[in-house]
Image (cartoon, rainbow, N blue to C red; front, side):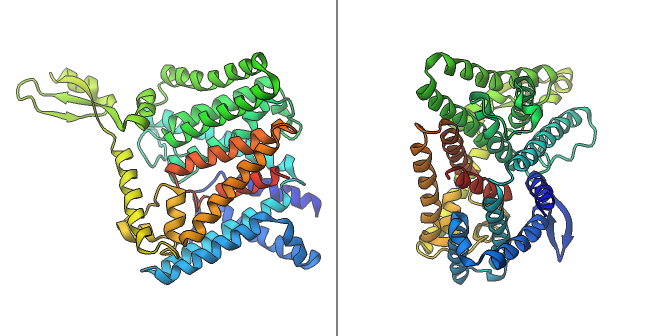
Length: 431
């Protein structure tokens, strides 16, 4: 039984890196994590039968998850499409159940957890790099957004969340020489660095800007904690490694032409809400229009002038519009919420609020919002308590929590199974 548990935990964690549908059932996509949730749920019921209800007292995620489910269920009362919101609630319940399963097994099977996470990150990173190479060469690339790899996720932003959060324990391992639970090959510095370099390169070409900010903040938090504990010179060495993990991918991307995006310009657009576009100008009429970078040579040969100018970033603007529309929903039902999926109904196309806190408030009311805010404050408090006694755990919790907050300010990962695994992992680390 123990051997089966080890294998299943490894496969369950690995499945979190493959958010694509494997088949359709009743018109709905079935993902690998859903099958893991089914098996994990049966194992939880068996444990409940053997250990009794008192066993549940040890779990924080169970009670938090139960609160999320109840508040989301109350929101059904105000949903214009209760059937759709109920379907979303069933999916959420399955995700939370899987998160609860992970919480109860993470400490016991930590090696298998890290092995599943390592292979998932490695496969996604290599595949994401292939996608952009294939895009440039005109090969089949399976990207959902041109020149933005999505790996085995439905969109690049979710791949960005997976990579930015998933790499935290490996970033901490760079700073702290406690790598016993990592796969044996990553316990040595060169393979660990190459692994992180691949992950950072894949993350950079996703153009998932919230995840860029998150991983930079994570590195900063880890550096500050070890500056406090170890002093300036050891931390300077760690900072140099982290800086190289930001700069070297940019060099590789430029030399190998892995992205057609101007990466520094895209980072700049986060703060200034504008980015560079390339335009072809007819010298006779003055007419100009936007073109793709790879089309510059063709238009120049036709006599067009090629210019670059700054314009408002439509992606940043759309996120602001989504947040504004979600706030309108919240004002209608501040206390109870309007049910899961309400933003789909409100805007006539499928998206979330691109902000976890607004999404929870709109879906599950004020109670749901207080739960998620309370969870984050609890994690920050527990991480702060551990800075003096266990800097490694403190770095994991604080960097992980701050990274989770940042990515969710621009992406609401309610229905990303990896996000709930990550919360379970953070809660387990506080013990």
